[in-house]
Image (cartoon, rainbow, N blue to C red; front, side):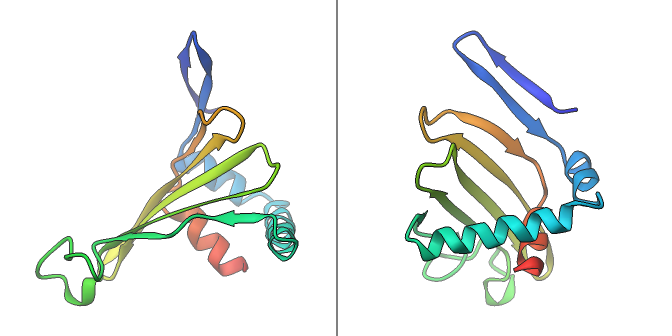
Length: 135
């Protein structure tokens, strides 16, 4: 079950917690579905249908580090975005972490048609780790 943020002027925002995401990710069919989705993404990229925004990296060169005593700009946050032409949603992912900090983050899905936030995945960086391992 997910939480909903309701408003009279817009559809509800679905919010999924880390626990809910972990439950789905541990299901017997998740790995196959993930590989299929990544394969579809690479195919869309090959057809020129994938659109990616410029990656924003905060806390890393040429910007100042977040923490002055953190060596080699280890603690940083990346903001990545993209969409497949004609898809229902576009995505913005915020991922932070780096040695000595654990990964963290979330994924936001917005409607391509309205630009309204539709889904928040409070995954704490789990989906980034899983996707990286699967690709």
